[in-house]
Length: 330
Image (cartoon, rainbow, N blue to C red):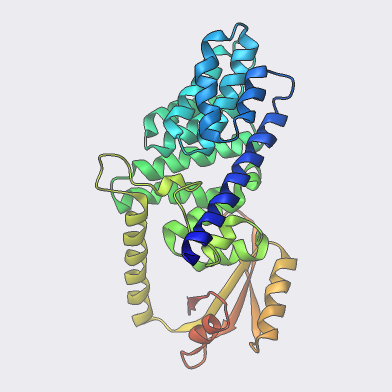
């Protein structure tokens, strides 16, 4: 009975959240359509979707049709009805005869990518990238295009190209809008704890940081690119696991011939973030040092490291809550 009541309570909270979502969404469409107002009054996303669909034949003007279909698409996307949402957004795109609505196109790409139709997603993204936007929309389009590449990969070797693009994004000023997602993608695909540490130090309040550092679980949405492609035996997550294993083997071979001198805890472009990491290490009883690095891009970074002594430092750091990886002698 307790479990039932607990589940009932969670369902009630979820229903309340959905109701608040519809009200918040309605405020974005204020004074646009009576159909939207009536749909919200039905009380649930499912009933609102059903009401709107039954009301579509009665819509007269193009502007109202665009508003209603956009509202419908938002509801369907929230309900994880991604294919339906894509079709609703497509109607809005077709009706938009003036300046292209970039945000709607991005939402359409997200939804169709969520069901594994990468070719269609790439076609939609091409229409956004053609605008050559150097703002948040352009950054999201670039990231989605790389995620398409991840889903299209048929082997672990084919992950190398999208991983390379993601690494380049770290030094791209435009990609500042999507930096948490870029770092999370790199951490997921390579297993390199440096990216998780960067999320923790620079973007601690984001869901990406929570997932990478174990405070939350990764779910299929919004990281829809982890979902296996339809009718395929390959998916990015399995390939990523093989990629990590391959790198682990390479690291092991390197360790056989080289001595571990340092355990690197973080790599920072911002000196303040490096200082914060140093303070945390000192408070935990370690003696951190810094190494200056200059990347091929010309950017300077500060690596926060702890000297490896008897081979126990890495485990001691992890026991204290710090991710690290070895730095070998030259």
